[in-house]
Length: 426
Ligand SMILES: Cc1cc2nc3c(=O)[nH]c(=O)nc-3n(C[C@H](O)[C@H](O)[C@H](O)COP(=O)(O)OP(=O)(O)OC[C@H]3O[C@@H](n4cnc5c(N)ncnc54)[C@H](O)[C@@H]3O)c2cc1C
Image (cartoon, rainbow, N blue to C red; front, side):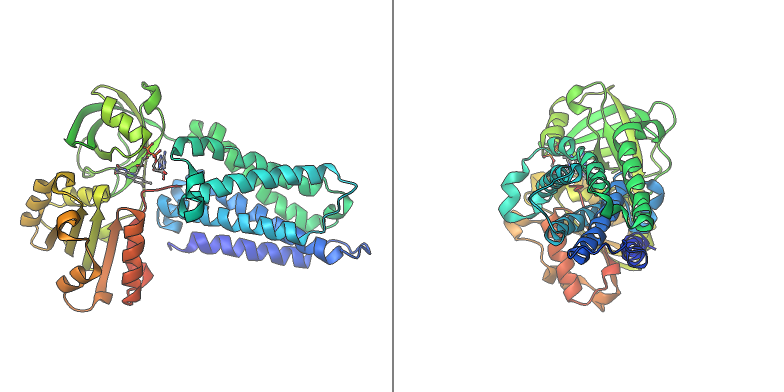
């Protein structure tokens, strides 16, 4: 079920190629006909991939189950965007480009190419070592820049219609590609303009603000009217505080309280502009607006034997799991919580208390600055039987998630038994 979304996108790309092969453009005697034709097929795949990417940006809640959660949809959004970027280069290298007699379509192509490539590179930069300085640190600036992608998408499609008659010779195939142009454009307009009318934004009020340590904030929120639809433990929401200009940006945070609680609790680490501002200035009685809940990071759907690994603020979904337990945990769980120093560790008393009340929960807390980093060997020493019988749940810094995922895969654990929540949508 969780792979249906990705498989659908691959199927659409293949179907698009088939449509272009079955309904080719009419041969007009041009010696460059084949190159032009190949370029059009590649260009149309660009439109398909970008349309899928724009569609995923609309955060369709109903589609979460086909991708494994909204965070995984964002990973697919990134992958389709990256694939489209690579295809743009292939498209440019394939189509014959003349230096004379340029039409409107050629100019549109240059603008779309420059716009899409710049935004895509700035988006991917944090993940590419030699480009990471290009990335800038502010997510909000990047989000504002990324808003332009839809305009370049529209220009890219219009470039194919305004190159001259030959691009229109494949009428059936162009009509088919137009469906994706419409899907992409409507998705873009929904995300940027009229989505707010349809999305459920729920009004809440900040009931309490606490600072469990000198870099984190626990925010308690109470619904002013209808509360958020009963969520599963470990899900996340988007929150903003409209009364405060600096805090009126929608950011994702895990609901660290249990679903049965009347209030929602968020545990937020001060890591960038928004979260530092929130740490310094958020006060009781501030209005909040919530959207959600999203996510499918849910240990209850996993096997009997489980390993949970939380790094730093990656504790929050596990905190929700722990708060949801009533002493009757139905799985055998080895829970590793690792932070650098004891003063960074959050809610240790609560975690230890849950450990005592739930005989099947074994917690292992590790302070990496003094005890060294948590390694796969530490984990393997504590497991009972074959590691392949375990389901692993990971949340924390991306390098930690990637390193453990690699190690578990190398030990033969199937990919489907490794579950992770990525605290990053970029
Ligand atoms: C599913 C999910 C659950 C999360 N749960 C928690 C949690 O429980 N506690 C916690 O402290 N943090 C959590 N985060 C991370 C939190 O959203 C970011 O730390 C926060 O948004 C950073 O914003 P900033 O302006 O302070 O930092 P910046 O320096 O501007 O951003 C740091 C990084 O955070 C990410 N980010 C920033 N703003 C957003 C945004 N609006 N939408 C998506 N990603 C963004 C980007 O990758 C960015 O590069 C979660 C993130 C995700 C995706």
